[in-house]
Image: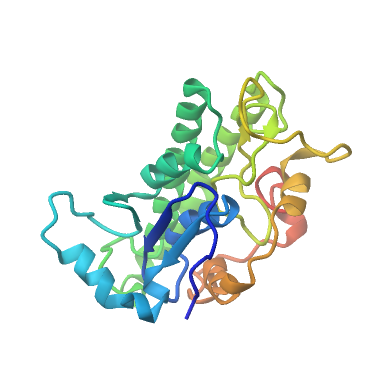
Length: 262
């Protein structure tokens, strides 16, 4: 059982609804809540909050604005679903995005692109049917994995590389020139997956530490460990998924430096 946070940075107590025992898309939201110092209850992992019964009640309830799928976030009487929408809502309230509307919208656009990448990565194991078992579609998954490795991953990473290079404030961050409390993208292997910063013209970011070179170096130092999510982190890294034919895990040295922890 995961205990609720006992303090909140913005005075609001949030309720996160996501499946228990796995990080999945809910991890994007957890990390934003954690870094923002928000008071929140991880309902699916908290028996006293109802666990799966509370999740079923939210999804099957008769509310006027029901969520299609999880994660979902409750903030008072408001219910927000979809990762990018939740992060767009939380960002300014927890000081995780720039105050400038244009920079905030650009950050949201990048997060939507990340969501596309996550969806494609998930569907590699389910190319025939989302509801079908992986073991029943292995040949198709192997073909999809090859296309994803050879075409889609380079396209996504190449795009973010261009964004870094074209940032008017320099290629250190995707947005602006200062590091926020934490990027809104999920860390990979203990470091930052992507770096998003606050715009210096009014944002809440802090200047990057001197002597740090690039997103990966700064990200590894900025991401404190989350012991209470340690078990879930092992799942997030894919240890519960069977390897696809022809795939292998990249060594730390072989990973693209700008998109993984150093």
